[in-house]
Amino acid sequence: MGRGTVGWLLVVVQFVLLIVLILLPWRDPSVLPLAVGAVLLLAGMAVFIAAMRALGSALTPTPVPIAGSSLRTGGLYRYVRHPIYSGVLLMVLGLLVAVGSWVSWAWGLLILVFFFAKSRWEDRLLAEAYGQEWMIWAGTTGALVPRLRRQR
Image 1 (spheres, rainbow, N blue to C red):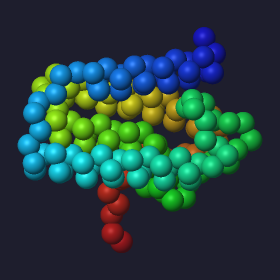
Image 2 (tube, helix red, strand yellow; image 1 turned 180 degrees about the horizontal axis):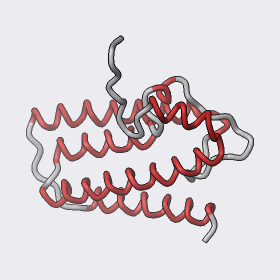
Image 3 (cartoon, rainbow, N blue to C red; image 1 turned 90 degrees about the vertical axis):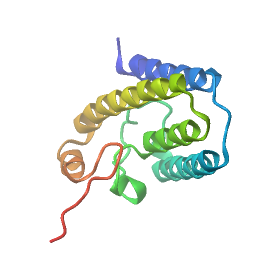
């Protein structure tokens, strides 16, 4: 199976996971979890949109890098290698905090594992495409959450 096919398969699985999450049973909302969840959801949306804009012409629906595009290491990409995925996960967390049932939290864990695996696959493609430039960047940049850096 080619990379393009795997990339599109991952996109389909991602959408199925997120649609199932929305269709799962929810608990009745209460004020504090609803407020915290809304803040997390909005923060995730902001990260998602900013990361998509930062990619510019390198943005693609699949995790397969566009040939000839440059590696994006500025903006949010200075802190995490996959901020689009981080934004989606933050939105999922917001939804779960706001109204998540135990079933939806379990499904959310599955979504986290999926995005972790997807980011690892994409990292392999990026390393192949950008070589040493990617290795240096990945050595100091977290995949889904920022790395804690030592103060010198």
